[in-house]
Image (cartoon, rainbow, N blue to C red; front, side):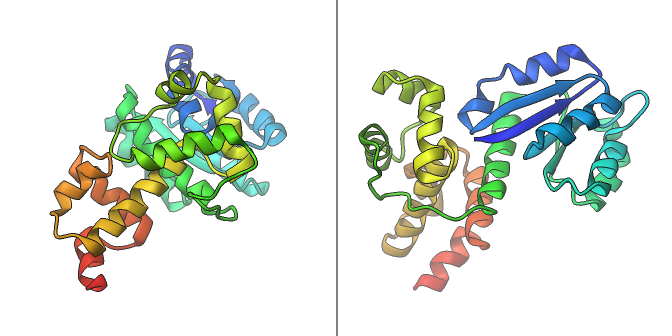
Length: 242
């Protein structure tokens, strides 16, 4: 599980985001929240989260200033700015300091899911890799991963898997973290990308067909995830494999 800390001077914004089940589903636990950026810096130093989600414009201290302060004391976590479209230009300095990404208010579940999947992959790349198809010491996890591998094209969420196997969502997240060193969503992304690469190498199906067979109904999103995984487009991958 990855640790997340949220900073926003609007309590309602904080409450809306931290209550989205996508956070847990994508392997993120909330280790702290704050409406005061000055106090947040102290808490972040203590909790050492993997990622800080922070509003851009806040009284006393902006999200960019908070990021700068934490980087100066050696904080190595990722940063995600949450703000409005009209403030995007003011976030340029955030990206110049290697900020990870940007969420626009009001934050939608779709945008949050895409960012968390991308962020999970970024954090996982800093840790030792783990196999996606090998059996583990957990019979329960083995049954789950076998099911996921056999049903790559289906829509899977932590809730649907929890219901199917009669297991607590937190428990499932811990199984993936403890035995495979990854998150539920990262695991699914991995097997889908493996299947996509295999189909590109061995079939004549169109990229759009392959996208659907791998559980992606948004073709452009599939191409983006593929490019982030293999550093090339699906078409380029196919051409190189022939």
